[in-house]
Image 1 (cartoon, rainbow, N blue to C red):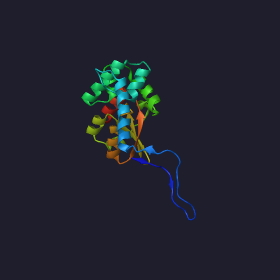
Image 2: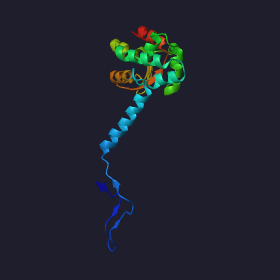
Image 3: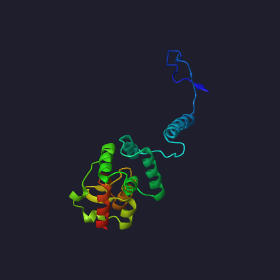
Image 4: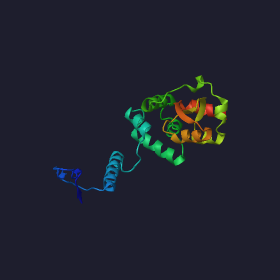
Length: 193
């Protein structure tokens, strides 16, 4: 099928006029969507090794680009994080691949989230108490304080959106991520529980 994108009907005293541009072939929207999905998939597969088809996310890709960890280390850590249902940053720290301070600095630059020393902040126990201990351990995040209808949440991995969503659901407030170092976050969660 073909269609003409522009048609002017007869107006009183004027004849109908058809756009002189050539007709374009009709392409259904689902074929263009399939084609664009194919292009995106082929780009992702083209960048990943055939033996290990793990696509590196934003933080992992940035750490590899900055030559802080190797591509193989990033892919292995990402696979382990998915398999063990752990945050990517926790896997890197457990494997001693990179320091928690360096990861926090790179994540802050990559995602534009503020980097804070959690030891210098007074954590509001009432805000932290709104979320159950089980949820805090599961999502690996800690509500720090509340300003109006917004709860500021300490996370070591800014891609951990599940943590922000679960805390948002538990508190009933909007959430804002604040980056902290992984080892200090673990200590703060243990102290809050």
